[in-house]
Length: 195
Image (cartoon, rainbow, N blue to C red):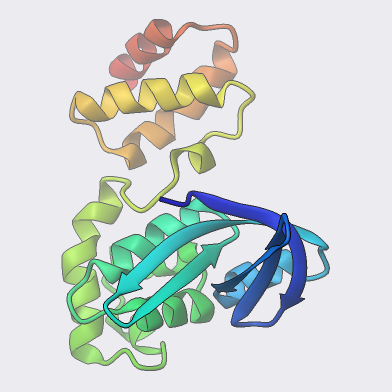
């Protein structure tokens, strides 16, 4: 499985990125969010979702793991294919999509071309609980601290204990700011007191 492709930008359009990686040119389908991040750059790292069907093989690329995680959640909804998910990520930002799902704002989701009332309702119904639990979010985005490895480890442990990533994301940055030299077990203990 391909995690990411890093290379020179050969061509960039609002829908496609061609990356040269050691003499191999990869055609990668992108959203407008990713296009805006890569615009004006000569090199890029695209986080890949490898899409394979009987008659086609495509690479979907994202500027961040966070956007890719949300894309994967969206295509897990029945009736939402890769084209619709990419259109959603081109019309709304990742945060706007999450906020619309959490607020059950079906009308906001319906503003995306190709998404009707029933599809929008299904997106809200199938993803609201997952978004609340922090799924479809890259953990490293929650913590911008130097010790993100400790944050990842603490988050994993707390999720296994039954806490949601969203709630963990609210308390961990404060703990790590207050105790920059804390060990993983200290971070977990402090988080348990606040959760």
